[in-house]
Length: 274
Image (cartoon, rainbow, N blue to C red; front, top):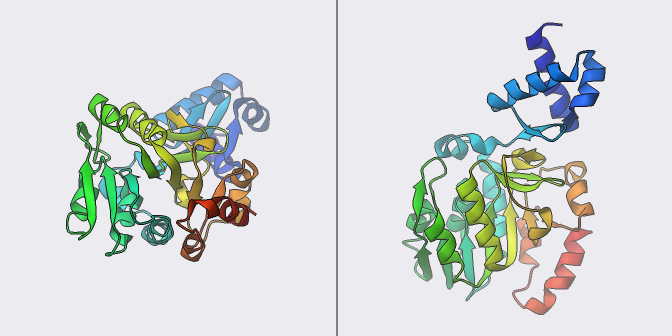
């Protein structure tokens, strides 16, 4: 088997199984583990997978530029945004993370909603500038141009002074074992600070982001209160997340059933997690 054929087969197995182990690939392809490790290293350098201890996982599509990500799964992102926007209650302080999906959430917030949005995204701040009743607080910092978000010590420090009701987290990669991960270390620190600053955390993820990993881990799955994903994502793909106790929302009508009265949150979680 040629090297290119072997590496393509590795990718085919990874897409099917969502995870590969070097030892198993060595036995299956009848080559040494050193050869497999070299294959995985080369594939990782090409952005085709994410190496982890003992093997590899699918790579996050978030390594693409912001412009390219705007073209990825637009219908999924709009469906996710509609459902996520229903979770926002009047009078709340909302941390709205940067990203193409969270930008859609900003665009789907009701025009009569009174709330405060804290964001590190210049594009989201501009999108909300014309909203009649939303106060926008823009977090400073260094602009991470690839993702169009502000990052760095100033951003993290500002988040430390906020107690938000809700954080809408743009998910780059989500995996039941690895948790939430991102391609950039500074962005990982900011997302971790966002999670710590909010009473509840909503992860927004298209199907492409599920079962993938990136180099820098933000938090475990348990940091999320809800996962909002597209209605088209299968029960099979979501089974591992539900097994960890994560509440999954896939439809805007489900989001509507969440009362802004906090005493109803527990019953809501029980009904949607089942």
